Amino acid sequence: MIDTSEPASAAGVRATGWSLVLNRDPAPEARRAALGELCRRYWYPVYAYLRQCGHDPDTAQEIASTFFGELTRHDAAMTARVSNQCFRDFLLQRLQTFLGADWRELPMADAADLAPPPAELEHRNGQDNPPGTTADDAFQRGFAAEVIARALQRLHAEAAGEGHLEMYAALVPYLAREPSTDEYAAIGADLAQRPLALIVALKRLRQRFRHLVGHELADTVGTDADLRDEQKALHGFLSRNRDG
Image 1 (cartoon, helix red, strand yellow):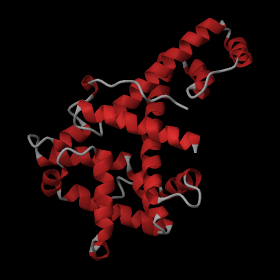
Image 2 (image 1 turned 90 degrees about the horizontal axis):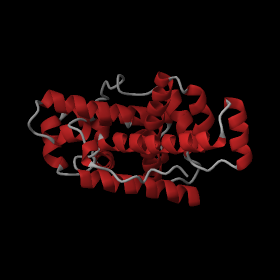
Image 3 (image 1 turned 90 degrees about the vertical axis):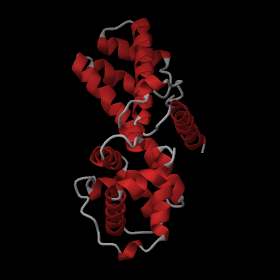
Image 4 (image 1 turned 135 degrees about the horizontal axis):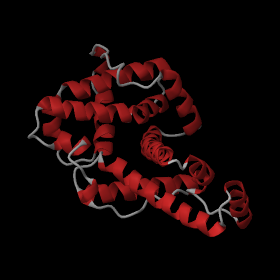
């Protein structure tokens, strides 16, 4: 399993993302923009939750659009209610509250600029959530998947920028497990690298990946303590899913 449990430091909690939403000093427009960016990133877990609630794909997309539209429209009232929740807990709680209210009476919001393509959402949901998956598990799995995916995208981009894509492609399958002796030998032969050099490179790749996971999570919390809690929660969820 991919290790995401590296201890975090508040040097990673920047004045962006959720910490900006929680801050009452910036203009409402700045908070709304930060919240809108987070909603764009984490649209999928909301969609997955709605699908596991029994809504068909088109309806799930429409409900998600209306939900996110309402969430980003009422900035002042939302900020006052948030308190010190992390974004993950806030998003799920607000979604459950939204579904329990008269959301059908609301006009569908124009949130198309935030939404991923419906076909992509449905493909991912079909892969991630077999029949019997609860809505809560679908949300938590979707949120974790977004954090991991964004960290991997950045890891890939860094490797490309440094001219190390070949090494990255060879080693990234082993973020979650140790290569066998034969696998190290095969990779070394392909890349003309000694096994010891590959061991060091894989260790550095894993360390950088853990750092990037922490960086992504930092955008969803307001304090160092919350960041450490979110890292533990992510690691625990991935462990449960692996063992299950």
